[in-house]
Length: 235
Image (cartoon, rainbow, N blue to C red; front, side, top):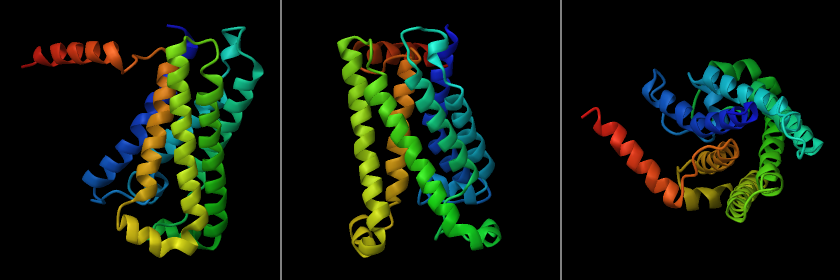
């Protein structure tokens, strides 16, 4: 397999599993916590090191992403956008969001003076990261692809832009409409679920771009049959 295919699959798989692993770890671990306000708030749980390591890894993979090194039909735009996305991911992994209103963490007291500044930097870096990755899926990945794959990447990119818009609306209006959000969503961690869907979308796009199995149509049926045959061997 070509190196950049492995590179893309790695970005995809890390992204897909990150929100699930930190949520599961915080639930079954000593913290015994439910779903947090956002994926970023797992920084304040026992899954802090996992969160930072995974996001930092995504950042490094994106930072060194350079498909033109292996295929001449790729331009420098992929390289530059990867550097922007990678730098943003590293910043978001190292500079935390505002302290959770659910968890009382000793980490909060150590950063309380800088919390508003950290939160703004984290939100800006996270927003730039996901917007860059939506551009990858919607504009860059469909180039030189067959019609079916072009539509798939466009759909994924479009879904990402919609999810980003919903999160932007929440973050820019929550001070004014906080009670409205509570009335609509109650205690549901609205941002976590939007981030989960967003990360699955961008992870799947990168996984597909790495020539991973295409989980739809006939390929999905074939994958299910192979998986069922595999597990039957253990029964």
